Length: 284
Image (tube, rainbow, N blue to C red; front, side, top):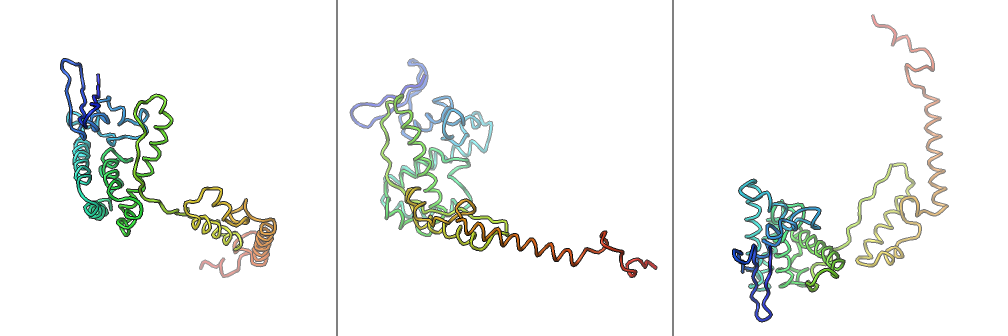
């Protein structure tokens, strides 16, 4: 049995786990969050399949009774980072800016705050604490030059956006109101790399590069607007004009013909096209 009691007046919050006669009551915010993400709901929020992601990095069950020292350390790290988030909420915008620089070094060899394939409750807690102090242009200025922190902030923000979509789908079954999240970073478009076989006409490569450049400059435009900004003959293959396709085919055919003619004029040694020179047969 799990019961969350929220008083209508004031900000007191408590979590009761177990039967009413022997229930364990938790009153600290961070402990309540970690309990709900872990054993409080039988690890339902820390198991892939029952939850969109592992809010404790999948370490809750494996850390029980010392089964995995690595998971035990990760759980302790989650607790510590949530304490850092508390301090950030109580601090100033300058304190948050300093923390961004410190996080850049820490995240240079890590994807998230603790070993995990997805952001954990600690990542979200610290992210919300930072964007609660710095948002918009102020956040962009503070994160300038700190690529590791930027990557982490963008990932946390994108994951929260996905969770908001999941929450909206389940709104009919939930009494929890939708959360208002401060605006984080506005990720810049990063074009995907283009690959070619090496036999394409130069016009094909140029058209594909032009299309990628146009889409990148379009920034956060909607897909339809980005497509309109790109040249109509852009893209690798399907977006070429008939003239470009014909020119590429003619050039490829001419190249193949030249190869065939060269091969005919210069047959390989030792092949079926004639006897080998006498010097090659002399083994004395």
